[in-house]
Length: 366
Image (tube, rainbow, N blue to C red):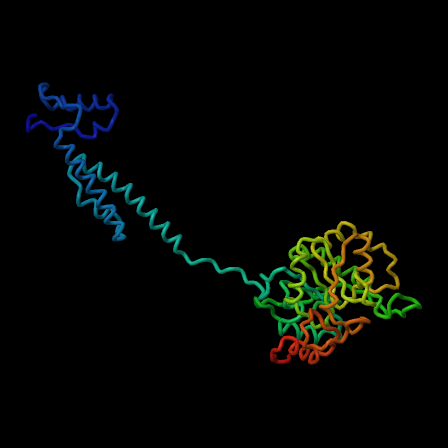
């Protein structure tokens, strides 16, 4: 080829034949017809491009190790003319890929988001949602238990229902914990054999309202068991969990008192009442069955047992795990025994002393 003849652009080799022919015609106007440009690269030019490509690949790898944008290094390997244009396109693409890698690395190394705060016993199994009704005489006892995170406040979740919304303290996440306000009716005590089946409070209307509130809150569906506890009951949720573990997923309620040793079913006394999620589901689907029972003259625990019986929910006895002074058998066990519930301990100091004896721990009374 004539040394003074301007060669056609090597880019012609990268385009379809029709475009290549057009480039050929432009070149023919400047070169003698006898030296028309061939349709393929001369071997010398092919060698240069291949060498440059190898250099680019090496440069990319080297740049990645140095964390340097490859385009800054690629330029040193480029040649004038068409090779430079091709190399610029390659370098631009390499730079884009490099920036993608950097962005991906930054995303991967970003600090993880802070997990949502949870109560101290939120992950205990089986899960327990525990609650109590609080009257004015119970405020000091409930507040003390909350401060020490004992009793119902050592469950996965908890609630207190009262006539007024009252601030009880700050929870483990620093949020205000308040009682749920309900318009609880005033009730009187019964006289056994005269106007009632109990000498205790005729409080079924109170607890029907409470169960309505619990169902509407949705919390009863978030735990395996819902546990109602009297405020003056020294209660140990971890011990209860061990008893209930084998009943997760089953429809059950618990009884905790026997009038005579051969009673296999027992009675439900209100110091502690446990209903599984399945049992609550049965109640939810048949509320009228329970609410229409002849409960006038009944205590709420007597009503709940008759409700569960009417729904066909089997009882699980916890006679050896509960010491209730109001029960004819098994009451007033020493606090040193590892019971699930010891009842009653109405004074906060007395409550904590019993808790300390049962756990063999020294605690600051609050």
